Each structure stands twice: as structure tokens, then as C-alpha cells.
Image (cartoon, rainbow over all chains, first blue to last red; front, side):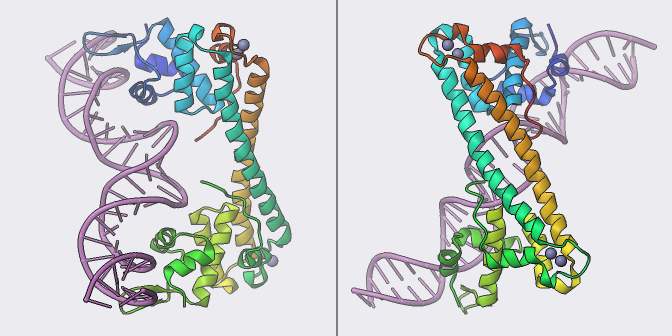
Length: 142
Length: 142
DNA sequence: ATTGACCTTAGAGTCAACTCTAAGCTTATA
DNA sequence: TATAAGCTTAGAGTTGACTCTAAGGTCAAT
Ligand SMILES: [Zn+2]
Ligand SMILES: [Zn+2]
Ligand SMILES: [Zn+2]
Ligand SMILES: [Zn+2]
């Protein structure tokens, strides 16, 4: 049985974060001491590590929540449900990649066009490009 | 002289956003009617469009703020200052790209490993991989 | 018995960039 | 003149994932 700080040390999450995850239903301590201290057993630890792994991959807490409910009763969930979550995340990632590649491209073009030197910016081609506004839009949403 | 909704129509920003930008010092109306209505002249419009272009590229409002202060007095700023801002943004974008590519890679591997079928998830290799925790960390910061 | 480290809670604060609301003027059209 | 559309402000709310604080209780070691 681990105390919260021990679980924190083991998972690399902070105690704050563990309590935060508990508040959001991701993790819990199956036991409490008389004084109310959280105590985590083996199953709790495995669940916490599952959460940590999923978070590291980039799943949102909402995604992780869904994965956890599959996890607690695998027999009543299908592989398809799991791939749906994963595919949806991949779609998101791909969309962001698109956007970032477009930004990268624009920024590289801008940098190539500017001398980057110490003289004044009255002739700066980056400023001119921003002024002209003929740059393609790279940002769709925040 | 444009009213705020006209500037909004012209730039594709909303009137709300224009006021928000004003509050943050990015845009302003050089005139106000007696009743307090904002009126934008040609220079105001050009500035607003500059902001819009920079935002579309992906610059933060803080970046844009710096670009604008260069813009109002180009003779006392250098090309280097402009490239510094741009390069810094590119560095950020590259870092995020790295992270997303790593997420993409992990998700693709997961998806390849799972049958995605309608049978139950007791054997699901995605779930197993999350359980095993041997996936590389892709997320560094939010 | 007294440190000091650790634990508890509810709840507030952080970040960025909006987004929206309420309450009340103003202006244009019919 | 009346209705609607549009403008003003200060300020609150949104999103996601934390991050921190205050005020206090607990525990192991000296
Ligand atoms: Zn130059
Ligand atoms: Zn330049
Ligand atoms: Zn399967
Ligand atoms: Zn599967």
C-alpha cells in the first residue's frame, strides 16, 4: 500500500495531479486510513500507470476516461471501440500536423526572404509580407 | 471611415475580437463619434489587416504586439529583431511538430496492432500496450 | 514534547485567445 | 414614431489540464 507521495514518486505524477485525477474520476485509492490518508493497492497503482501511459501518448482526460471504462469490463466492450478512440485521436493529431506544417512552411519562407541583418527594418521583407497579407492562412482554430 | 462591424466584415475578425484586440493594445480606432462609436481610417484598417495576417500565420498576440512596435517605427528596429521573432516562432512550431509526429507514430503503431473488430476487448493489443506502459513518451508539455 | 515532513479539504488561480452577456444608448429605415 | 439593428461598457464565462494556497490534522523521529 502506497501513500500518495509514494504513488507520485512511482508514476512521475505529482500528488496534486493525482488528487486532480481522482476528482475527475480517473484514479482512486481503494483504502483510506482512519485519518483520511489515501492508500493505493496494486490494482490502484496499475490503473494510475495506465492513466500515465495514456496521458503520455497524448490522450485527453476524456479519452482516458473512456479507455478506463473499457478497461474495467473488457468483455462488454469491443476492439472497435478502442480503435475508434485511437483513430479519433490520430485524426486530431493529423489535423494539427497539417496546420503546423503549413505554419512551418510560411515561417521558413519568411526567414529565407529576410537578410536578418543589423540594419533598420524599413526594407524588411518579412514586414512587407505581413503588410501585403498575401500569405496563406495556416491557422484554422486555436 | 469604417464602423466596427464594417472593419469586422473587411478583416474577417468579429467585432468582439476587434474590441478584445484593442483592449490588448493591438488595434485602435483613431476616431470616435460623439456617441462613442469607433471609426477606423485607412491606417487603422491596414494595421488591423497586418494583425489578421500575423495571427493567421500563427503568431501569438504577444509576438504580434512586438511586430507592431517594430512596424510603427521601422527605422529604429533591425531586420534581426524581426527574424528573431520569426525564428523563435519557428522553433516553437518545430518543437510541436516533433511532439505530434511522435504521437502520430505511436497511434499508428497502436492502430496497426489492433484488429478493430466487433469482438470483445479482452485480447485487445491497444489495451495491452497501454497496460504494459512500454510506449515512449510523446508529450512534454501541454 | 516538539520539530518537520506529510497528509487532508475546498476552492481559487493560471494560461491564451477569445466569446458572450447585460443594460443601455444611437441610428437607419418604414 | 416605432421598431430593429447596431453600438457602448465592464465584466464574467469558456476550454483543458493542471497548479497552488490556506488552514489545519497526523505521524515518525529526536
Ligand atoms: Zn534586411
Ligand atoms: Zn528583414
Ligand atoms: Zn481485436
Ligand atoms: Zn484491439
